[in-house]
Length: 358
Image (cartoon, rainbow, N blue to C red):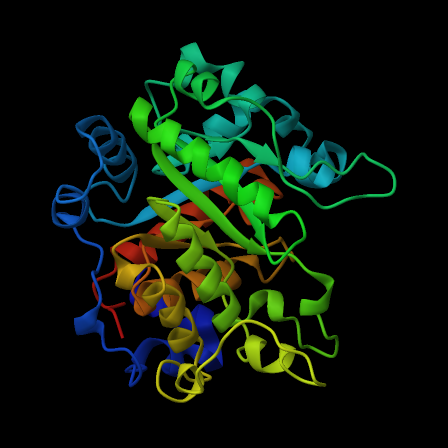
């Protein structure tokens, strides 16, 4: 996919997304992705040679190898959303080998999925594509449904099956977040000791964050940005976050006599704007100005608009100073070859020199 095709897909948003120049946090203040990213950022850090090697495996595989950008296939929906609901459209993905095949043929840097899915094919594929084990999940079989991330295995188990990294979710803002922070801090320490990299899904979860009428502050730039900052404090090597859609979460939750968190109005007037690239840049800024790479999630599959939506997210992430996309449902909830093409299209955005940092 070339620049012209990207422009056509973006339609009426093309000019705004492709020509925007950020007037908030300048790109010169960011630590941007590039072929030397590991040498610039992680070699001076406390990461061991073994962790550097694992990061090297992640950044030097697939279509984006050596660019400093990442395209990761995540499929943990079999646990998170139920296998039947996730794979009904493509029953071939009940077989974990097809998850690995999609990541390989789709040119991804890595595949992120469950202990069971990776373990059952580890000897065949662990040396062919980097494995990321998602170590905790929200299971939805308890009645009524509850929303809590719980460990499904050990860090040592992930290491034994050949993983180069572990991934984990914390539901920041939830009643359970304190326990989850402690669990994941310990898991990340052990992963780094064993030489694995760490990726944190910095998601928000609290019913109070959703005010209705289009005001869902689970995707607010200020709240997700703070979740990112907590994530890098836990020494995540990469942060996964939903693309921001609105702003003003702290403002909205500090109304009606309530007191929530801390805010400075300059978050909204100087550090961000209403432009989607500036909202995403605020997320990048909270990842130590890009020292820890921000990978935005691809979101759910909506059908006909999936390709456009994926390209839009990739353009916003790249131009904001992000490190890539971690997109699953848009790829695996369609015929196999179409999924491969969608992943390749995402990668084309990061390979296109005309799509530059704003």
